[in-house]
Structures are given as structure tokens and as C-alpha cells.
Length: 249
Image 1 (cartoon, rainbow, N blue to C red):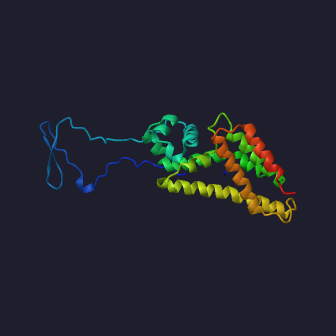
Image 2: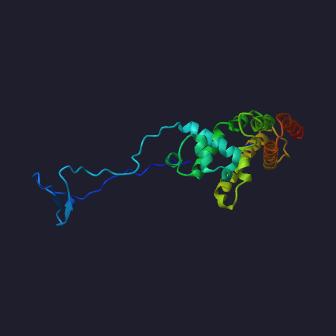
Image 3: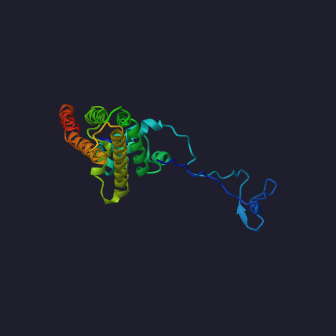
């Protein structure tokens, strides 16, 4: 599949006090109260200690952020956005919910970061393919790279960008729009590359770069769906071969 987030800070615990409310501690072993400027009395004891704040103290992160993000990417890839529960994510990432929220804010932000991780890692073949010297070489490397990734036994079958979108309901419309936007950006990158090829004479003068980019994206997304349904690498490579035989000459 051709497809090319925000950190949070926990609010620190603090004890606010004003100069006018400073406490005067009576001297002497028998002192049994504290007096404040407004005249109120507060019960005390000779061994009274300052009150300590309760709740989180902002302990330093004790897990590998990159490994946790890789684990989350695999869960989203396998189950889609809505299918991935917080329990699924925290269990796979090896962290608890407070740590997830502290590091990634919320599930949606985590998913966006997982998409970035996907583009930079497993999906990096797209960026490399666009650097090929001819439009034909670009397309061939894109489709072959997709076939390899979609059937890689080290990853879930199919494409994260497609799988996550197929199961997005109305409640996750913002996620669906994010996926649509990223796929559109990938198609635009491919169209731009084909426009350059046409200007250089690498594509026929009557070719349409926009139509060609849409055609290649459609093939790629179809391969992703086929892979998720169990298609083998050999079967997808035959699809690539058929597509390349239809390449404009």
C-alpha cells in the first residue's frame, strides 16, 4: 500500500500559599494550636509535620518509547483503529494506562504517531521508490515493495493505512479523515513524479499523470485488501506483472 503527533506534560503538583496566610507556631512544650492572621485556630501537636501532597509525583518514564510505539503500530495494523482496545494496546506496549496517557495523550494521538512510524519504517519503500530515475522504475518498485510488505510474515497481513480505514465507524470520523488525507498526499506525490516524467519525455505526451497515479494507487490498495484476505506474495507479484504490462509506451 502506498502511503506516506503531540507530547504531553503532566501538570506538576504544587502547594500554593500566600504571604498573608503564613502560620505562626506558638512556642513552648504545651502549645496545642496554631494561630493565623485571620484569628482562626487550628489544632496541632508537638510532633506535627508538614502535610505532603498526595497523588502522582511525576516519576520519570521507565519504558522504551520507540519499542512501545512499534508495539502499538502492530496492534493497530492487526485490529484497526476502533478494533484496538486500550487493554490491547497497554498489554502489547507493556505499560499501564496512566503511562500511555502521559506519553501519548490519548488513543487518537497514539494512532497518528503509529502512522508516522509506519511511514518511516515498513512504508519507507515508498519514499525510496519515488527516487528511481524513470516513471516505470518508480511504479515497479512501488508495487513490488507493496507486495513484499503486505505479505511479510514479520508483520500483520495487509496495510495499516487500509486496514484501519475499513473498520472506522462514525465515532472515529476524524481518524478516517486522517487516513484519507494521508492516502491523498501519497497520490499527490506520485502524480507530481509522473508530471515530472512527462515533462522530461519519460512518459508519452498524451499520458495523464493524475489518471496514472490514481490507477497505481487503486492497484496498491486492492493488493492490500487481497493480502488481508490471504493472498500470497506470488499471487501479488503476478498482479504487479500484469499491471506493468499495461504501462504506457
